[in-house]
Image 1 (cartoon, rainbow, N blue to C red):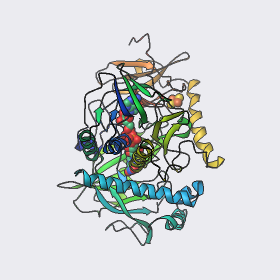
Image 2: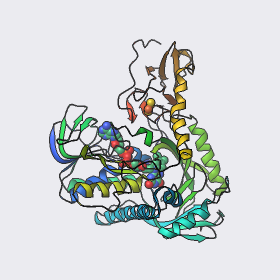
Image 3: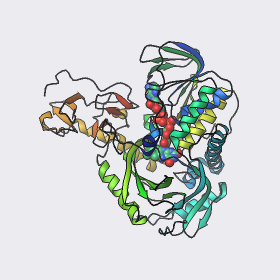
Image 4: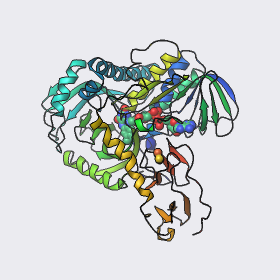
Length: 507
Ligand SMILES: Cc1cc2nc3c(=O)[nH]c(=O)nc-3n(C[C@H](O)[C@H](O)[C@H](O)COP(=O)(O)OP(=O)(O)OC[C@H]3O[C@@H](n4cnc5c(N)ncnc54)[C@H](O)[C@@H]3O)c2cc1C
Ligand code: FES
């Protein structure tokens, strides 16, 4: 299955494990900790706090685990995506070591939880290999080896142990991991409830305040009073962090391969954007999961072409991969210095905590988030606090920072260009387009039955014009990554309100 009934792609995890649905919150309540967001970040925090005896409520506006966590590929690595040598440049050797240790600690934590709670989620320890991309010939591997060997276990090997694919000399990182993320979250949710925690799905937070009387308001008019609030919503809702968190779309295929035809390991290469690979065992065959082809959210609309490129890349290296069984896309948030933002929201909101900026490593960053934030709430120290401090200052050079800034502002030009079509009549079934009426821009979508949906195309964050995402049937903002359904309802922040209704919806 590659598409759901509403036209969105379906990940391998969603196809093989049901997302949990709980009651929605229908009364105002008090608790020790209110966690907003039931992805890996929120549920790990909830698990650790309930285990320590705290009263915890988790709310999610969708199903449990149905956010970015359901779209991942679930590599567990302490070999940092942005490279250890860049982390060392940006943060210094001591903090680079702490960051690598934190990711290793997160994998250990997941392993511990899997064992303690007996979660059947295919958790496996395996080696990871950073291989040279054929597209570039820079000295990335050399620089990475130099830096990594100072802070972690790494080996230079002649090739990765894959029978038919000669990777050439590469770096081997031992004791990485992988798992089935939704099976893991199901186990976490069960353990949280056994510890007395309460989970509510389809419960949207519409407001929160911290200071000395923290509380969360929900769309249904309920109030949750709590001693602490954790924003585990991927992008921290109602924050102004958008300039520090550029949003990207990334693409994944799951190709059918003969059983045991590829040794189990993690692979990623030095391309930009890079390819990432893992194997998921099935009963009759295995699935080779290959991701990459990232782009800034809303700035391209060629998802199917990106899947085709991924498949071509895969077949050139694994010629026996002859069929795509799964294909999906997802969103991730970068930071300016390769590490997540985890900790207190601000000095003036000391009881509000956030976990964001996954940098493509949100399985481990989300778990680090749970460990660090629960330590802060429980009043203990944590050696990683300073490394992930949300208010840390920019350590990138101007030359590194400027392209992201331009990329976030250039799309405002859409205000003065014409629409994609001059009338909604030109839009075929299953397609969406921007229609210009004078200075008004309309986001128009016609469903498979010919019904037309129209909303203002002006993003409710800072007024960019949204663009249609044909693959996922959503409206995506090219400036800071907000996304909306065809009904105009927000899917990804920073925007928080729906696209405005259009008064005249003739056609
Ligand atoms: C294709 C892809 C591949 C990836 N591969 C890897 C990988 O191999 N390894 C790795 O470490 N990371 C990977 N990542 C990143 C990782 O998957 C994410 O960073 C991680 O899942 C984020 O988890 P989270 O809990 O922070 O956010 P989410 O899973 O998005 O959870 C946040 C939740 O908050 C809810 N929410 C939002 N707003 C509100 C509101 N107002 N009220 C109530 N609830 C709200 C959402 O519905 C959502 O369920 C990948 C990401 C993608 C897209
Ligand atoms: S997300 Fe900022 S303007 Fe749309």
